[in-house]
Amino acid sequence: QFAFLGRFFNLLKVITQSLIKFILEGSSELKYVSINALKTISQRCKTKFITIQECETKTLLDTILEAFPAFLNNLIGDEFVEVLKCIVLLIRTFPDEVSR
Image (cartoon, rainbow, N blue to C red):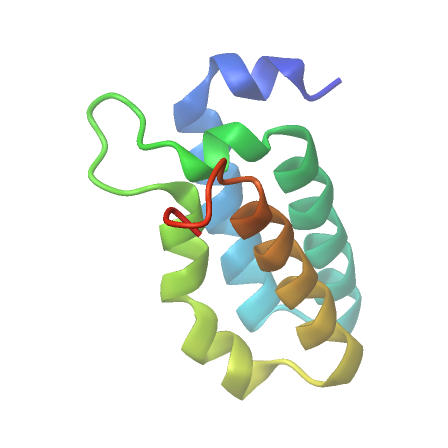
């Protein structure tokens, strides 16, 4: 069901940016759903998250990492841990130690 996102990077980018916004600004229920959605999408499309796409200057992982200070300030307990798990999963996707 997520295969179409791999073919439409711009859609994946907008969804990722929206999820980050919901995680940072949403109610606790919206944060929970958004964190789970980000984890699921990043698991299913992990290579798209770590690869710079055509006409782009950074990866989607870079976009998530740029929000990291805000995650530190706005998330508590399990919320932060789940976002961190998502980031670790994406970092582990890199093929070699140098890239990680």
